[in-house]
Length: 546
Image 1 (cartoon, rainbow, N blue to C red):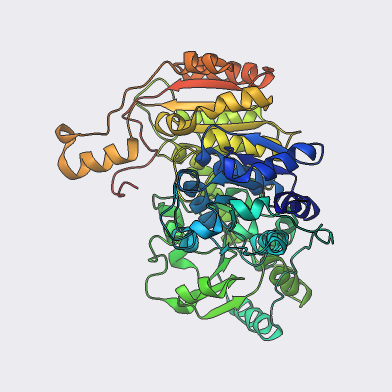
Image 2 (cartoon, helix red, strand yellow):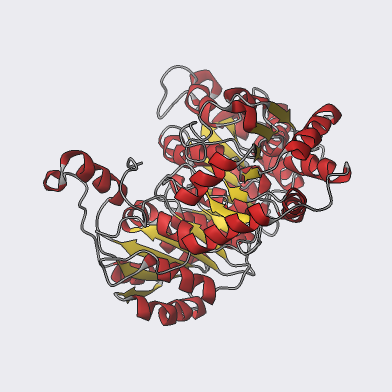
């Protein structure tokens, strides 16, 4: 067999079953091997390499394992980089194979050549460069394992064309290797127990590595025993059922007064499985200079070293929480602090509490979406200011049902919905996008039609780049708007041209019936919601555009 076939056999043996590609000549043997193994591995041919990586991100966020991405060198790899960056910032596993130039042409600025190491080193966990046919399958296995170990993330495997075509032996097939979670050091657990015992008002910030289904109940139990409110890190709203009395909302781009008060009053803040990204940490000003209140639990020592804290515990979330529960953490606590925080969240997230200028109220549309969908439905949001309406007013119920990228990248919604739908075939998938984000990768709707992948995309169309326009207006005046007013196409007509179904909604009251019809459609469906450009975010002024 050739090394391309050995690569495929190894990836399947490691448990991969789904991939996304824009095909390239440099990896034809891999495509042929996948064709022969199509009963074991589904390969989706996308319209753009950025769509490939966003689809893989949507898949891995639900499936909990990497999808394969295959792209060509140069143009293909650079197009794909947006989703690699998103996977890195979201701590989601992914394996991307780049079909590279022949080995003797490397470093000579060959046709479409880039240096993949210098390009991807800062936005991936590793860039692997096989040099022999035997290296190909060995590094493929290494790529899968690395992508899932510790803090998950994307791994790049660079496959020179001549190496892909070279003869190779059948790799040893040892089955998937499940990474062993890093256990919590006993001394750290003892220290944590002491901190918890002394705390009167503890607060938990639950992040991207606390979202797994097997963590939810232990996390809820921990919160109950401590009497601690749980605030979700940015775009991690499914860490708990949002109706759970411990749930206290979501650290969004805009500061919120009740959360400000919680953070000010807390005498212990536990960052649990959160890398404390720039939005969650409010650009690292969350607790001011008072590091004595911060405890940080995360498996990546590089992340822990970025932040000063009174206690940094290098371990995975589940072992830490399990060890704390098993170590005799107090069985019950005064829940007044927790209940007060949850009540404040419910009041803050009640649809209709912010007046809108237009006839489409995204708060009520988000609430209607929640009422229509089952608890297990997946709901994704693209990058853009419209998403702040969904983040504030949509209440997540089941674990691993929130999709979208914490990197804020626009264009993730349609391909992300494709990946999510493949990972959760038995559950409805709904994606929200702004008109700007949809236009970046909306052509992947044709991919969904061709592949028979069903979901609903809701385009919130205000015909502007909202957050940028808002910042521009605040800084220079409303009469100085420039390059932020976009206009837009007939989105229903565009959806129908791709072979999807389409509806237009101009008023809030019309939305529930349209959503029900879209969910019942046999094809992918698009709902075009017209929004007023005055209704950019459900917050007041005072936050920079992002």
